[in-house]
Image (cartoon, rainbow, N blue to C red):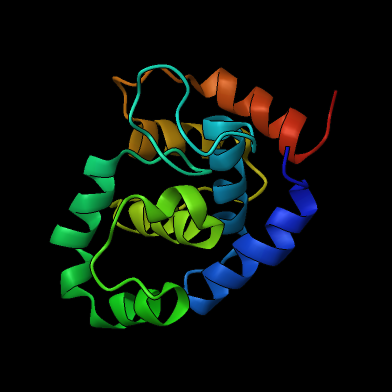
Length: 157
């Protein structure tokens, strides 16, 4: 497993700050998403799924973000180019570039119409993840997110 504090301090925080998308809520939501989606272990979905990266984003979602959002957001797309050397997204970058995977996850959340949940509300983050990242039809559950956040991010046994 990736060291949680190194992931937080050396990947999540700098990427979110560079994108001007950092807040305590955003940081905790990304940490929870990575814990839920990959257990901070897997870079490709196990089994038959197509999801990639530490936040397990599907290539179709990745491509939609580039085609229908980033191409119209000059500041953000320029930041992606400057930070990661990515001009037009290639979903394979999600697998080998932790920062890129975090950036794409945060940008995905930034498209959601509702405000981010409070940083200290694990249940709120879990519900937000379910509604805006996993989707209501997805296999993951709010309870699973809460358990993975508490166990992996907070280190509660």
